[in-house]
Amino acid sequence: MAQKVAYDTDKRIIYVTTAPVNGVVELDVQIDLYSDMKEDWRTDPALGKFIMPISSVGGNPLPGSKTLGDTYFLEVPWKIRPYEANHKLAINGNLFARDGTSVMVPTIGAYQVLTEMFVSNLSDSSIQQLTEIQYGIYNGGVSLDEVNGGSGQDYDWGTPYNPVDNWDDVVEVILSQKLPNVVYILGDSNITSAVPSLKYFTFIGQGMDRTTIDIDSGADVEDCAYYDAHVTGTLDGNSRLKGCIIDNLIYIKGYIEQCVLSAGTIVLGGSETAHFLDCWSGVPGIATPTIDMGGSGQSLALRNYNGGITIRNKTGIDKVSIDLNSGQVILENTVTAGEIVIRGVGKCVDENGNRIPTGTWNGCTIVNETFNGETLALIHAMELGRWRMDVNLFTMTFYHEDGVTPLKVFDLLGPDGQPNILNVTERVPQ
Image (tube, rainbow, N blue to C red; front, side, top):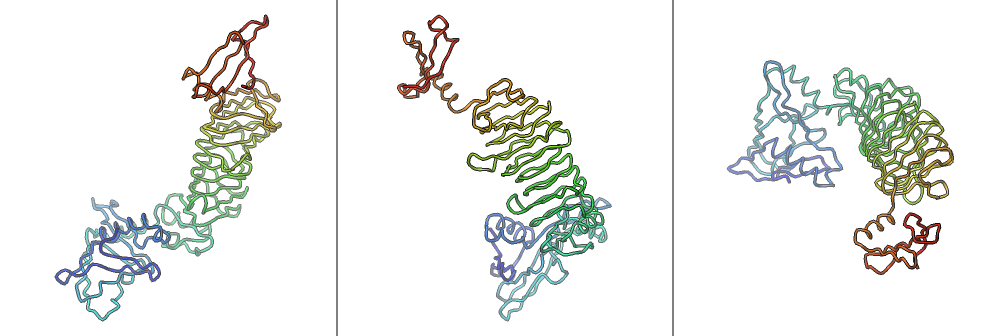
């Protein structure tokens, strides 16, 4: 928590709150402003709604075995107001206003304040320093806000504090500033066929509930990555998604990791394998997301999945592997060929809710290695020794932990009418 300043987010003022000592107030830019401010912005939800007033660059290597000293920028329209008293304000560190104006505003009262700035570790290679500072301001990519941004391609268009509003400017700023192909998307965005090629780009949203990226089928987004967004539309090959919500999507080859599959259909294509790693269903109740296998040619690896999933339109010999952490797999009657292996805690059923056992089902080879809570209870009963075989009644009964309540009863009768543990028929416990 800040020790020497406070914030007025309405007026965009940073107030100095520490009283002068021997007529002097000392502020260290790195400690008293930037570091304390980062902590306040991280822990106070009311402050977290606003962009932090100070950004930092520094430590970057420069020619001649020099480095760019830590440099801080006060963002527009924020200003610093001195303590309300006659004193000298000594600011230690490289602090500049983003727009080139003074970082200070006068006190409210008629006080005399002498401000001294002590600059440290600035390289004398001023031209190179400016380049490094400009590069750092972009935070490793271009910021796009199609609603509140503007149009421009010069510095500082595309920074977090001055985002552009169109994809043409995004591409040009990346080229002119020699930035990585990274785009920070503020709000929502529609990537249409009219935008330039975005091949090998990375798109980062503000959160799966705050940014929607809608991709038209004609857009060139091959080999792209998507993070922290709601993604829908048509992806090209080699796509990577992490921390996203997905609903209606045409998907060709790649990796979907730690994503929520919402109501809708994901259609596979491109005769490639689609990998889903550590994903969840976002559909409550008995409804499920759907994966359309696209007929033939596509394989699917669904690993450590949580919740329900429906598989449809599988007519080829391609293989499917599904590992459930907990959930169910529904196979529609349009699944007619190939091999599907299902493992883990859950169940595999048809459209009517009937369990599909290992074997041939609807022309498809099923390997069902799932087990449910009932099976776990029986295993637990065996571990506790809570079971008993009654030879006279030809039954085997498994009991609850209380040792009294039956969980399952199996009749054990062979062809000769004698007890035979290899011939087991389940019946409801009485």
